[in-house]
Length: 72
Image (cartoon, rainbow, N blue to C red):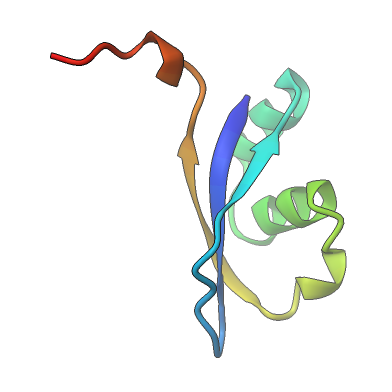
């Protein structure tokens, strides 16, 4: 599963967005957990585990299937 991800930090706003690819097992774990566990999963995939204490929350949007949308 591919998601667009933005981290919201305690004292800063970062305008950029990361694209993260997850295998099915990781995606299911991501969906069925919350809070700190989601942050751990995402930051591990981004190789930014050191940011854990600075991230307040994460905002994500699924990107899978976007190629199937048609303009009306």
